[in-house]
Length: 241
Image (cartoon, rainbow, N blue to C red; front, side):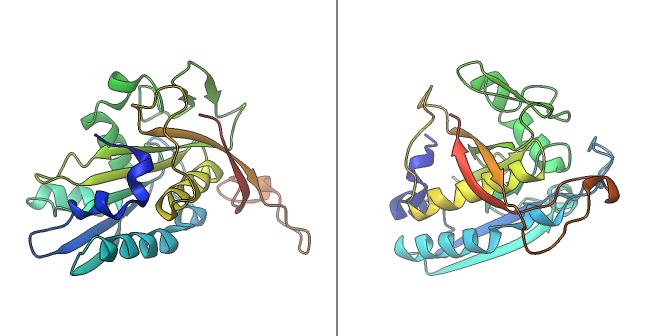
C-alpha cells in the first residue's frame, strides 16, 4: 500500500532497489513538446526547483536502507516515452514533474494507474486539460480561482515489473508544481508525516503556495514575458487536504 508518510522511512526504500543493491531514481521533466500535450507553451525553469535536494534525500534514505549504491538520472518526458517504446523500461523509481498539460508521462501515469477512477481526487478527466484539482472531500480548486494549487500523489510505478514508486509533483501552473516539489522534499526529510486528511487511504496531498515577493529588483510584468507565465520561487506552502 502506498503511503506518503512512509517516504521518510528507510525501511520503505529497502524494497525499492535492484538485485545488485542499487536504488535508482529517474526524474522525468516536462517539455511541452509532445503533440499530445495540450499546452501552447514549453516547460518553465521553476519546474526544476527542489529536485537536487530531493535527489540528495533519496540518496540518504537509500544508504540508510542498506543500498550499496544510488543512481539518479534526469530526462524529459519525450525521452522517457522513447525509452518505453524501444525496450523494457529500467526498473527505476520515478519523480514525474508537471501536469499532463506539459508532461506526457504525467498523463500516461494517471491513465495507467486509473487515478481519478480509483480516488475521485486530484486531477479529474480529461487529464490533458488540468483546469481543476478536486479534493477527496469534494472541494474544487480551479486554475482561475486557485492558480497556485498543486498536488503530490504517490503511485506504484506501472512500468516496472518489480515494486517501485512513482511520485507525481504537479500544479495547475508552475508555482503549484514548485509547491508540490517542496512538499515532496518535506516528506522525504520527515518534516511531514500526515496522510490525506479526508481519506487516509489516498496517498495524495493538495497544497497551496504563497509566491515569493522580490523587493530588491523589479520583475518584468507577466504580460511582457513569452510565454505569459509567472516564474517565481515560493515563500511558503499550506496543506489544503
